[in-house]
Structures are given as structure tokens and as C-alpha cells.
Image (cartoon, rainbow, N blue to C red; front, side):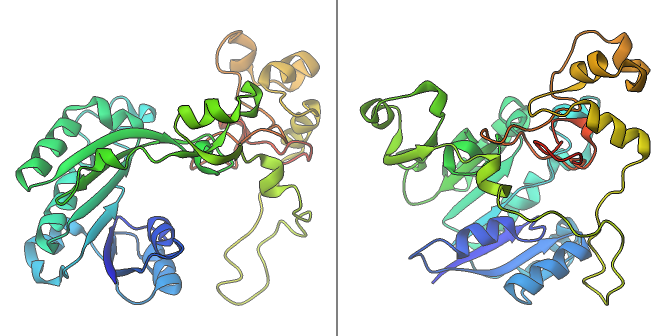
Length: 312
């Protein structure tokens, strides 16, 4: 059994990737997050071994709680590095890689995998992580992987730092890509020579992901006992619905809204004749989705409208 610790675990996305890997006996022995709702979700999916609390405080006051492990995985909060938070030069979350590496050391792990935003690789913190890992006896590989290249119907780029005390991670990373952009029409030989698996498939698309889903039946808070009452849809205002209807075709965006319904277009978009083409955009059925961010339910924040339905 390969023992895993998942830090900043959230609901357990990284844990799920490991424990569901076919033919590999991965098992999490400890997980940690500061958010109690996330921890409750994690426990519901993977068991009671998840701990809720500040990892810095845990290491200072109860370090013996860290169990032995073979692999430590996690994504320290990325807001301090993100392009969406350019002014946070002193954001304390930028330093949360330190307790991550302290857990790696305390657990005796032979491998670690750290995930974050691509901007991390261009910071002093990245150099510090690699240097600190080297002092602990780890060889490292750092790079950016794109989710669409590995079967996810979403064009999401993430940075990964992989460390190993036993082998050179560069011999295994980056992993061979499993999916390719069909618009390039590459030959099978071109794919293999470009770092793809032999049976690579075209990108997974929005249609692949949601094309067979039934229409939502309700948008109000459910009259049901917990936890069934936790999920509810967003009810658009009449003006928002009119805006959705003004951009009826897949691929349209705020510039189409301005052309089709200038009276419904926000004044800031009327004044700004140039800029991003994804705001208030509809997805395409036969392309991957754009990156799903926290406020994906707000079409004014990005390309989040359904390809044909008048809703996000």
C-alpha cells in the first residue's frame, strides 16, 4: 500500500485522482484543510482521517499528528501568486509552501507533488521551493500541464512541482499527452514524436461533458432535509435573461451583445471597444470549455454561458 498525505485537500480532488488510479494501491492516511465544510465533504468521500485546522498551528503545537507516508500531495492556496491578485506582494498565502515541505520532511515521504497556478514558476518562491527540496534530498521537475491534453474538457493550465528522493522525476515528467487538438489534424507519427501516447484521442469537448444532461428542473432552494437543500440554481433578473437572449449563438460574446442590443449593454462595455473576447461569452459545443473559475455562474466574468440555453 502506498500511503498518501493530501494537504490543502479541499473536497479531495487530488486524493480522488490517486485512489481511483487503476491498478495502483494508493491510500490516504491523513488530509488537512482549514475549511470545515471541505473537510466534512472529504470525510464523506474518503473516510475520517481528514483533520480540520491551520497547518502552521498543527506543526507548531501537535507535530506528532503527522503520520508516516510515502507521498505528499497538495495545492497550497494560490491567490498570492495569481494574476487576478497582482497587488498582493505580501500575501501570507504565498509562504504556505513552507509547511507543505515541512510535512514532506516530517512524514518521511519519498515523493511529493505540489500543484499551483503557472505564475508560481516565475517567482522567487519557486526557486526557494526547489532549493529547500534539494536540501531534503529531493530531485525535482517543474512544469506547466494543460488539462485538455489529458482528457479534461477544460482548457486549464496548472503548474506542478514533483519531487523524488529515489529517482529522477524528469524521467517520467511531463507525462505523455493523451488528447490532442483536432484542428491541427496531426498524423499518428507526428503525435508520437510530439510526446503523445500511441492511442491519443481528440480533445474532450463541452458536448462530451454535458451534451446528454437533462434540463434542470428547478432553480429555487429545495424543500428537503440536509444535505439535499444545499444546491440551488441561479435565478437571472429579467435584464440578465434579455442579455442572454441577445447573444443566442455559440461563440458569441460581449461585442455581439453590444451589436445586437446596445440598450442592454453595460456602459463600461460600451466605452471599452477593445479587450477580452470571452466576457459574456457562450461556450462552443465542440470545443473544450474555458477555465472554470470561482465565479463561473456570472457570465460577465468570462465565457460561461451554455452553448444554446439562456443560462450559465
